[in-house]
Length: 254
Image 1 (spheres, rainbow, N blue to C red):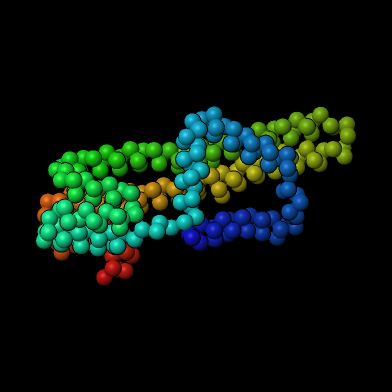
Image 2: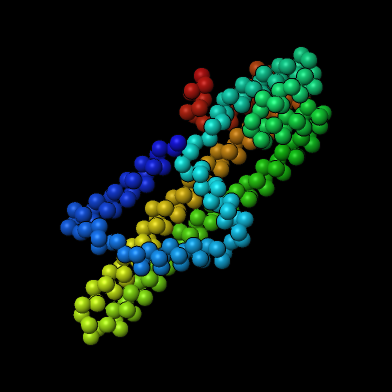
């Protein structure tokens, strides 16, 4: 679980709500169902019009990246590739066929299968790079869905504010109804701006970061498997692949 995401959500909401309460406000003053329906429904509707269903579904699935860490440790991948390189130098590439069943990472498994099948190193690299390029393109669409929601929400909030003001103008002769209309007007704006900056845009940013980490790992795997198929020395190969790690991961592996 990525607890920093949970802490960030709670901290952001706590700061906004806490500040309001310190100023003497109440939760009831921002609890407006009408405003929520306008902003949330309008934002989702605009997103659904913008993107095809498969992109929206993929974005919902990739939303899990915001709350979970990757279960794959890059250093464990490096150790596996180094071990496989040692086995291949001693017994040949076909000796790695039995290792395929032990690999759970899809990209790693696909690449090792290419190596075991005797695919030329240059072709192995080309196949894996094509896989990475289009995987990144499709996955980045998920982040764009949330970015679009972050762009639409404030505008829909303003639309809700205008609708609230229209309601106010229609009831100038009935002062008891003015408060509800004004509340909807201002609360819709809060919901729009708040959801954009506390939810949609941060989620898009976190997805981009997590997807980039996944791409770096796939680049590491590609470089390692190509070098393995070329018969590179396992120790030198491991030293090369460590260069893909972040500073923190390098210190942890030292």
